[in-house]
Each structure stands twice: as structure tokens, then as C-alpha cells.
Image (cartoon, rainbow, N blue to C red):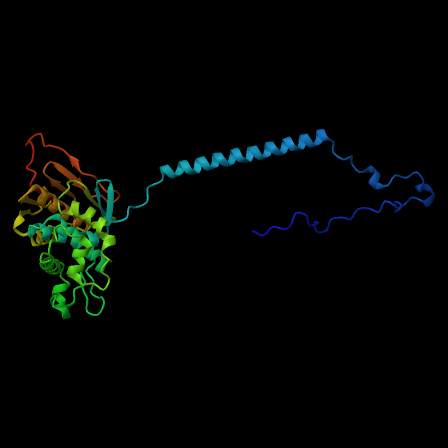
Length: 339
């Protein structure tokens, strides 16, 4: 806010009286011995007066500071009691002190890649390569546009023999087609991930995949099941239960590596999917798949062996290990998904 200069005279302030001008009603002869108004002005403040005013000023400033600190404390304290802001919908992996996050859409696509890699018995490195490639090509989204006729998760071009428009925009087909070419790259299991991605894609920017490698590895170790109990998701809105959609996608991704059965909902209990995986790692990968699809299909809890996870609308819930005292330990290859 604009403030006037404090040195400016105040409007309408009276001018100082002329000391040589006689006062009204006094004859000129009576002005002899008259004191001018200036001679009756208050005496200039002494050193003791100045000290008093200085002390008062310091006291006022100190009180203002103390009052401000108190009000600030009350305001900050009130923040702690306020409701926390809603969490951003996402999934996250925490592996070896590193965290990587994806949107829910990205997480579903990445989970498909991990499931198909398990179905084809490919090492977790294959999932890392696929995720790094798709992060660069499409941001892990199934795009219906791109450069020239490039489409889908990997921006594959129908004109270059990758498949029809319908095929390359199908995440399952596109991922399988990517792996078909990837496994023909010499030493793909040990070669630099960015170099393998470039060998498959033949991009005009061969080094563009490198910046996604570390993030892709952190995501892949959780989604492939290589590391256990490190994947979690949160969503601000959860769709109604749709176990059939989840079951269809699970079996399409994992194929014969999982044996799944759907129990329909009744008046007494909610719907659930029970599956048995061919290995503990595949079980954890299937569990991460269910987490990634939880907001879309209404999943409430996922249990892998004796570890359970609960879907939340406010925080990234952690995995909790608990053994059922009535039935004893559960096989680590068993997954139960409740709605």
C-alpha cells in the first residue's frame, strides 16, 4: 500500500506565529517587555527525557514481537489439527531406499507388462526394459496418436509391420510384440537397458531411454514380484466392485502361471478371487497387479501368503504380516483378493 513520506507537512497544519507581530488587543506601547510565543515553547528534552522515551519505545516493540509470536504459534498449532489434504491418486514402489511413483493409469499398464513377462518366463529385467521404453515413447499411456502413424504404449507403427491399429493399441498385444523383438536382441539380459530399448525401437533419439532406466528398475522390482511387499496404491475415488474385470485381465496377463477362482458376492460376504501362483515371486506380481487395478475394480484388500494390504483413499497403505491362528501359516504362493 502506498504511504506518504512522513517528512511531508500535514495538510491544514497552522504556520508558526510571527514572534515580531504584536498580539491582538495590546497597544504598541504595551509590547515593551512582551515575550514572544517562541520564548514560551517547551524546553528541549534533556538526556534523561530521551532515555525515558527510548525505554518506552523498546517496551512497545518488545510487546508487539511477543504478541506476534503468540499469534503465529496459535496459527501453526491450528494447522496440525486441520484435516490433511487429500492424497494424490498414485501407486509407488519403495526399493532399497529409492521411491518411484506412477499414476493409476500408468500403473495398470506397467502391471500388464510385468504379468506378461512372468507369463513368458522372462527375467525382471525384461519388465525394466519395457517400462523404460514406454515411459519415453508414450509416458506409459496407451495413446491413440503419435508421430506419423505411431500408436499405443510403445508408439508402434502399423505401416512398419508392428500390427493393425487395433492391435498396437491393445496393451496386451503391444507388450507381447515388444517382447517378441526384444528377445532377439543379442545379450538383452546383460546389455545396457537403454541400448536394448533402442535396438527394438530404432528411435531417432537413441539415448533418450537412458533417463528412465533407474526409475524403471525401481518399478519393475516391485511389479515383477522380485521384491516383496514394497508396492502400494492410493485413490481418491474407488469404483464399485467389478471382480470379473479384474479376473479377466489377471488371467490374460499371467496365463497359466496363475490358477484363479472367483467367488461371487452374497448377502453374507463380499466377492473374492482366490489364486495360486507357480512361484512366490509370481504371487507377489499378481498381488501388485490387483493393487494397480484396485481403484478401477473396487478391490478392498489383497493378501499374499500371510501378508495383507488394504486399499486407502488417503495414504499409501503398507503391508502387514499376520498369521491366522485358526488355520496357521498360508502358502506363500496363495493370493486372496477381496472386494
